[in-house]
Image 1: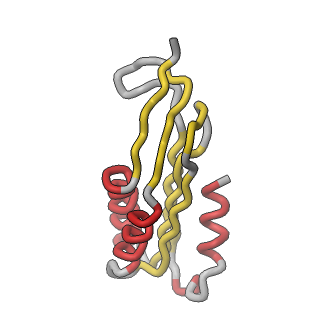
Image 2: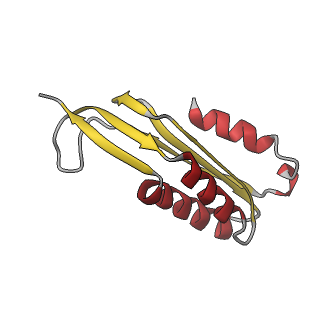
Length: 119
């Protein structure tokens, strides 16, 4: 499980005791596209270099201690985990916006996906 792995890594961080919270995002393949069509899977590809850049740039935001992004590339079935993002920091005022920004950036800058529709 991607999210469990990300949280465990976060807890192993040397500054874990300085964190006031860890916020997470877990993306999964859903059975219907946004336009309502039935989906049987998704082909997804991630750019590791861009993900590393997003991690680095998110870590320097105020109050952020660590950022972990785990992902599965390839052809995934409905219900499979696509991406997990964990952001640890001092307060929710810092952590929640950083989590949203990191997720949005990965989706826009570091991933490509194509839904596979049921016939």
